[in-house]
Image (tube, rainbow, N blue to C red; front, side):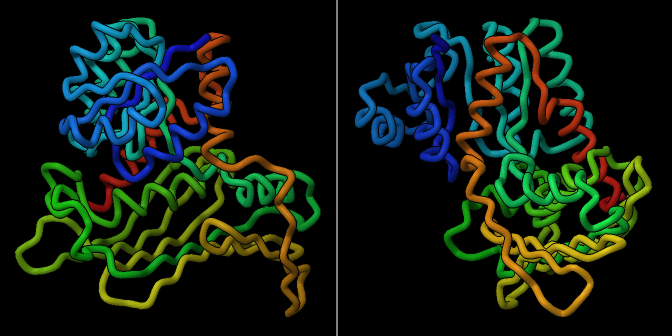
Length: 313
């Protein structure tokens, strides 16, 4: 039985907790966040302990594994303490606020002989997994290039204020949504990022980016263009996968469409795959039991952060 604790009650909290609850070989033992009232709100319905200090929680509960679901700038110090307490770590994306910080987290885990998986979600999504299957099958020929476009108001009033500062968020739309786009590209190509160029734009008085335009090349030689805008534009979220005998489109977090070289787009049934958070937990818990991370390693996530940093130079 894997004893699991959750640190941080950010936007993904319920997804993580629900996935743990479905695992008969895992036991949630505690929830921790800086406000006891918030911790209790998540912990009490599940009959587990609530804490407002994760060091005290680690010492008292001695979990085998933790999910770190904190603001970006808190990932490194929390990961360090969890590793020192011998906890395997599922760390929310982006891995940290800088590439160097990612390398330090990897070292902490290696020094303490604990596993690290980063919660980049794209490779766990049913639609991406189905697209991977179609690419590998050769049904649409060879993968040529990918184009991703996402837009929508990024700095809305209810977004937590730590997102608005480089010191705490690491960056703006590029580190947050750009990480998803780069993750998706790496999953589709099965290859890390080799090179990237592009540009970000900024609002007056802000040190985090509001848009990004990037040209990316994978180690396998496939290229990708990414266009992100967080200005006050209508929402759009689409990834087009161009192949030699047709194309695919990933729309939002829900739909995959295929075209076999004509103007007709057919929706693909992806229901055979589990939900992304359930599959992500399954992969992580399996890694804990077997002693090896097979997906979204620290090195994988650090490569994405390296690519993100290149647009800020």
